[in-house]
Length: 154
Image 1 (cartoon, rainbow, N blue to C red):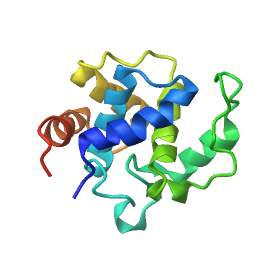
Image 2: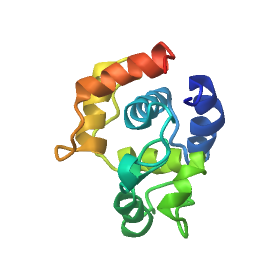
Image 3: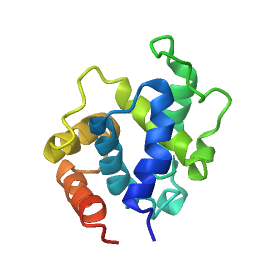
Image 4: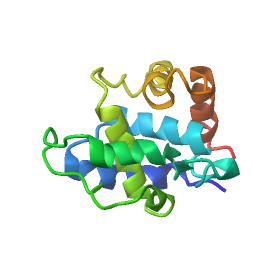
């Protein structure tokens, strides 16, 4: 069973991003699309086959560590709470996972597509989060968003 869409928005994404001025409707939809594609909206909390990805947003440990240690956070209005945290904590600390996923997108110089542009969000996910090296396709992300977020199917 996956996380209810409304609960993920209300209890995880908004409270995780708002203190850092990182929440807006477009960023919320981007994280919803990402969660739908990466973990079927929380059905998986650990990458299958003991892979390196953790949490609802299936962030790899190397990416999390890069965000935590390798990025200068003086660009944010407040410091991020990633310091001293471990990637494995994203399995149970959903707000940490949401913040880490949003920070990954935040570092991209291009603006997040509008919240209602699902195709644009899916292409943005592919370029920034999954990257050209990743196996995912933007069409799969668009379809996952439709299935798990819009239709609420499991």
